[in-house]
Structures are given as structure tokens and as C-alpha cells.
Amino acid sequence: MTRIVVLGGGFGGIEAMRVLERKLGHRDDVELLLISDKNYLLFTPLLPQVASSLVEPRHIVQPIRDIRGAGRFRFRRDRVERIDLAARRVLLAEGVADYDRLVLALGGVTPTFNIPGVESHALEYKALEDAILLRDHVIDLAEHADHEPDPAARRRMLTVCVVGGGYTGVELIAELQDFFESYVVPRYRGIDPGDYRLLLLEAGQEILRGVHPTLAEKARESLWHEGIEIRTGARVTRVTAGAVEIEGSETIPVGLTVWAAGVKGHPTLAGLATERDRLGRVIVNAHMRLPGHPEVYGVGDAITIEGRPEASIPIIPAALAHARLAAENIVAELAGRPPRTIEFAPQGMLVSLGEKHAVVEVMGVRFSGYPAWLFWNALHLYKLVGLRKQVQVALDWSLARWFPRDSAIMRQPQHCTVCCHTPQARRDAA
Ligand SMILES: Cc1cc2nc3c(=O)[nH]c(=O)nc-3n(C[C@H](O)[C@H](O)[C@H](O)COP(=O)(O)OP(=O)(O)OC[C@H]3O[C@@H](n4cnc5c(N)ncnc54)[C@H](O)[C@@H]3O)c2cc1C
Image (cartoon, rainbow, N blue to C red):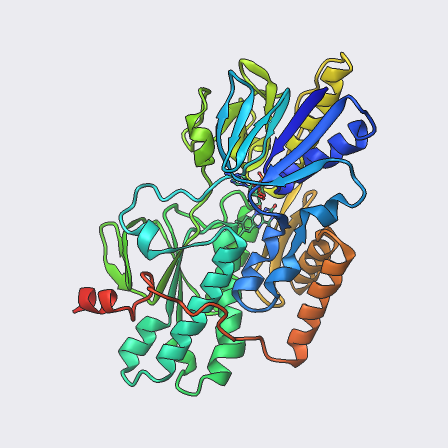
């Protein structure tokens, strides 16, 4: 029996398992096991729309057991704690799993660069829970600001600062702008249009690095037109509940800080005796294998491919390409065929800029504005896994044309350490 274990039920892990299932699912001498700490696949491109209450959280996740359908692979919801390469064993929160072939697809985490205060006073923005928490905090701040008599305190409460000018930060801030404009201002009678402030901070000299400069400039213009403040060359050196400090310039009072500053390797893989790049991502070769461990493959955001930076960027198409190749190379190896090498270069970039605006580059064709927004929506609806989810998201989008967004706070922020109205933040400010 050959035991093939895939770790991580994100885009990379699910795609690897799909290919393995298709090619090896019929074989009685092969056991397929997928392990992930979440029992669903999260469609990350729609996370900003969860944060802005446009789309219901459940509509952008697909349970792994439903994706599997009639497939034969086993799924285990468990947390990977450690991998023993020598013993070919994965240590889990609730047991162990032995393997003959292993695919690492645990994704990445957001780096904090050891900046003081980020972990305790900024919200993360990576998982579904993060987007729900962010949405609830923003609405909670609006509830406080609605009855705050002091205009300066109100404006501070309604200042949301997003750190990271990559496409995740840009898409998030554009969605928040829509939320404030179309929902908060009309419904909260104590809040005027001039009371809220959205701030995007980027340490580099440009936003949307990796996007064609013409499109990045168009995006910048669009955000500026919407009233979003963008500061480039702004390196954050400290975050407190209620303020962000920028190197060499000033401390900005804010209501809430969201940390969306890139991707680094998964901490669970930090203990592996193998090479990593400066972002802590595990280095694999062009066959997607760990050097010195040909039985272990790595895919997606958790890894970087030696000498292939263009194929190592943390986006979904790259994770899918890695996963297909890793699975095909496992199949080839079992059949005694030589492995193939990765051939992937991004075919474009799509960045949503809120309602009715986006910038798109697909196979060398670049466009922006409303047509790009329509294209962005159509493509993401098509890519969403499962007809049911596609219908649910399409309905969410349509209903938002006629009905207000839902601003019920699902989890009342308890013991909040991030917002400016907490007792600690008030003491700090005083
Ligand atoms: C807000 C946001 C928006 C994005 N938008 C886009 C976009 O529009 N287009 C695009 O191309 N890319 C986008 N991305 C990037 C894209 O989501 C990633 O590149 C992609 O998900 C990487 O796939 P992966 O399989 O490597 O990791 P992931 O999809 O992150 O999957 C990792 C899986 O491993 C599981 N896991 C983690 N740790 C453990 C553990 N210890 N034990 C067990 N399981 C574990 C996780 O729960 C998860 O299921 C976005 C990312 C974010 C955060």
C-alpha cells in the first residue's frame, strides 16, 4: 500500500488531491488522505466582500466533503503540528499519519516583521474569521461614533488604516469605502460623509507591485477619486490600539488597523530541516520536491521554487499549477516515468476596486473601469467552486442593488485590544 498524504485543504491541497484522485483513485494499492484544520475551501478573492457585508460568509466557502462528492480519498480535519521527515510521519493535534509520499500545501501567514504592537493591536486579514471579525469591528466603531459628540473623536473612531498596498490591501480598502459610502453614512444619522477616513499605508514606493504600472496608476487614481488616502514609502514602526506610528514622520490616530502586509512561510514548516528563503518559505526544486527528500512535495504559498521567482508568487493560479505538477510527478514516479519541471508564468492580474471599478490584465490585454469590473465579477463567479455557491453569491450581489447590506454585529467585540475606544486606548491617548 502506498500512502499519499496531502496537508492543507486550500487551493493547492484540493487541486493536488483532485488530480491524485482522478489518476490513482481507482487503485487498491494506493491510499489517499487529505488533512486540513478547516473542513472547507475558502474562496479568498471574495473575502473583502465579506468584510464589507456585501456577501454572506458561508457563501464563499465550500465544505471539503462536498467537493469530494463520490471521490475515494479520505479527509481528516486535524491540525498539523510537526513533520518528522526521517520517520515519514506527520504529527497531528489528534494523532499521527504515516506517509510514503507527502504534499505540503499549508499556505502562508502574514508577516509582522517583529513590529511592536502588530500582533496585539492590529486585525489580521487572511482567514474567513478575520473578515467576519473585521466587519464586526467596523460596524461596532460606527455604532460608537454615531453617538460621539466630539467631531475629532468621531473622525478618529472612523479612521480605518490598512497596512499593505498589495492587491489584498487595495481590494479591502476599496470595499470598505463602498461600505461607508453606501451603508454607514446613509443609515447612521450621527455620521457625516466627512467623518470617516480610509488610509492605505505601503512601505514601498508604489502600490500594487507586480501589476502593470499603467494599471497600478489607474488604480491609484480611482482610489484617490474615492477619497482614499494612499501613503507610499510609509514604513509602520509601531501599532497601538488607536494609532499607527510611521518611521521618521508621525503617529496617526486611527480607529482600527488592519494588517495585510504580504505573505511569509507557514510557521509549522519552520522546524523542518530544509532550506527556506528570506520569507521563511520552504525551497523546492523545479519538480516541486524538497531537496534531499524526493518523497516530499511542496506547493502554493508555503513554498518558493529555486530559481523560478515568476512561478513562486502567492496567487491562486500558481498554487494550482504547483499542485497539478506535484500530483502528476507522484503519479509519474509510481509508474517509473521521469518527473516534469514547472512551467508557469502568471497570465495576468485582476484587482477589484469596489463597486463598478477594477483593473484587469489578461494575456497581455489591459483594461479598467466598468468593463473590467464586469469581467472580474464574471470570472470570480465562474471560478467559485459549486453551483450552489455561485447562485448564492450572484444573489447576494443582486440583492445588494435593492436592499441594504446587513449590519448586524455577529460577534460583539469582547475585550477588544484593537479599537481606539477601548479603555487602554483612551488611557494611551490621554
Ligand atoms: C484576502 C485575500 C485575498 C486574496 N485574493 C486573491 C485573488 O483575488 N486572486 C489570487 O490569485 N489569489 C488571491 N489570494 C491569494 C490566494 O488565496 C493564495 O495564493 C492561495 O490561497 C494559496 O493556496 P495554498 O493552497 O498554498 O494555501 P491556502 O489556500 O491558504 O490553504 C492552506 C490550507 O492549509 C490549512 N492549514 C494551515 N495550517 C494548517 C495546519 N497547521 N494544520 C492543518 N491545516 C492547516 C488552511 O486551513 C488552509 O485550508 C488572496 C489571499 C488573501 C488572504
